[in-house]
Every structure is written in structure tokens, then in C-alpha cells.
Image (cartoon, rainbow, N blue to C red):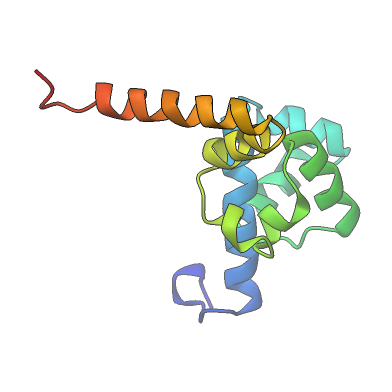
Amino acid sequence: MNQASSPPGSDEEERRKLGDRLKEARKYLGLKQEEVANYLKIPRTALTDIESGQRRVEAIELTRLARLYRQPVGYFTGEDEASSQLPIDVAHLARQAAALSEKDREELGRFAEYLRVRARPDRG
């Protein structure tokens, strides 16, 4: 059965989603497959297979990838529903913002609103 026809919730579909999240995180950080494969001590082709959903990820590999990519394991497995639905850069910002004081988060919110309004094409 190919990836396109994998039923929702199947092992193949879950591996594909996990691989997509891992690939997105790697690219977001500007890492090459070769660099990540060397970090994991696996062949680059094995990482390619992981990212395409063709190979299962060992628990230790996933833990090391999560540490390298600065994301919780739950982000990659989909267990952390809220953050796994967010683009990786937004999830990263949310984790960073959570560590700020309430006053600083309010300031960050105001700045985000300023950026959103500034980006509107209809502004005069």
C-alpha cells in the first residue's frame, strides 16, 4: 500500500506524519540530512527513509532528534495536539513566550498585533 492510500490512523500514515514533522523541524533549523544522520550515527539514507515514513524511528533516535530540534517528543508524535497543529516556528515562539513574565507576554502580544496590522495591504 502506498502512502497516498494509507487509511487514516494506520501505522504508515502515522510514520508519514512523524516523518513530515521531523523533516520540517530539520529544515527550519537549516540542518542538512547528512548533519543529522551523523548526529544520530545512522546512514543518511536511513534518515531519508524516516522522513518519508518508510522506516520506523527507534525511541532513542526520536528522543535525540527532539533534543536536537528543540521540540518535545510529543510534538513529533502528535500527542501534543495543540503544538503539533502549529507551524514549527510558531510552536517555538509559543514555548519561548511561555517562559516570559506576564507583563512581557502582554508586551509581546502588543508587538504581534502591531506586526499584524502593519502587514495589512490596505493600510493607508
